Length: 208
Image 1 (cartoon, rainbow, N blue to C red):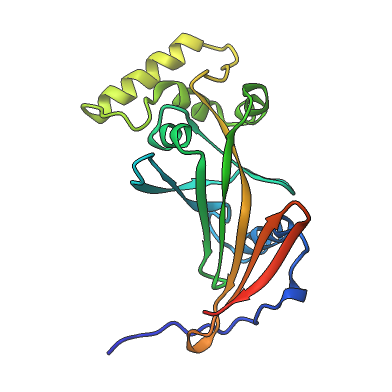
Image 2 (cartoon, one colour):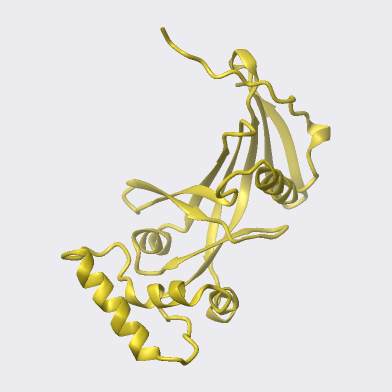
């Protein structure tokens, strides 16, 4: 017999949301953190090649400003290559404990290396070494080959500070649309979508 999820959380209305959807996203991330979500900033990032072939993966959103959201990666990775070809992307956050999701769609611009370095220098040293050692998205013969490269990279830098690689950095996704989804019973979920233009943000309710 089929089992169905019961959505017992409060509903969602326009007066519940901040006028700026990215401020509201910040609030929901904090509420997801308070609810005990393991990775409240994890989101599925979708990109596409110039031929229209989509790809998706989970990334961690490290910054949310009032204008954009930021993520970081190797510029030569699949997502980095696709963003160079087609600088449009979509994100989807999902917090099961709160029965909530947020969809973000917009254009992507590459962050300056000076800006990205601020984040890079705050990463654990092991992650800094890993960024240098990993040829992200490229085939590797075996795990040992990757681990040997990590050891060689660590020896190369010794006790010195690890600089940001020129092939690694950040991206800002500037949203044109942001949708907040709150689960409700009987599949009558609440969906409120912000769309932006030169005058600011407009919000409308979508049918579930």
